[in-house]
Length: 309
Image 1: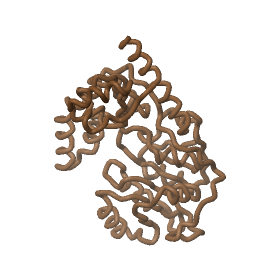
Image 2: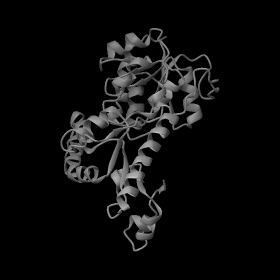
Image 3: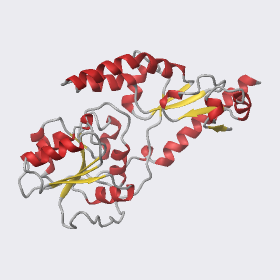
Image 4: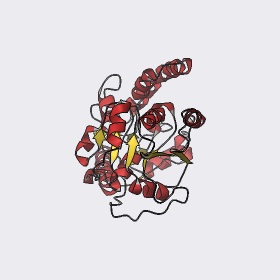
């Protein structure tokens, strides 16, 4: 089996693409639905992290302003192109259950999509947490890790904080994005400055250390998307997790995640309790993910060689 990412000449459709196609059995696209491989004579195996229809539904759910309505219209205009790309791919691999469901339904009608969940290295609950210089060692906190964007719903966590007692857990926010300034202003207006910490972008080792020491890692997102790597990393260190139904897929129900509705009272009541630690199911490890991809690529490669002969 020979495979590889298409060189620039092949992706641009030059004459050298013929020699490229003779060297490989399969073209692999990890994103963008095989964009740039339209002229490739090879079967295209494409990983789908989310569909245009999922983006459209998320934009519609968040369309409470003129900007939100503009996002809906943009997604609607781009939807036919997204459908064409996913229908063109020879083999589609979905990284999560919500993606799998979206691909199987109209307008994609790709019921043949293969579910291979994202995977992470299994770190283990025994991982020694590093000292994070910007946080006191004794700090009791819950943690949000991710992009600061409207669909991540970080503003909801500030509503939760206002319901917690003054001596309750702090909120630590690691990440950056377009909502950064608005969130900081909201923290200031709500007099939460002593209880909410913004760390900005930090490296993966620091993220894992923070997760390992957190009272809980929280996922308040409302966007339909693929399987969150941050969610899997929190599971890999055994962190207690509180998440919305959108953020936590049903396949992770047995891992110990607390799944709650978007009600600030329910979240504040849960976050003051002692929460159970979680665990990463074996099918979501990096080794399981790699093994599943290898099986798919071998099958597609063998089928192509049989067709060529």
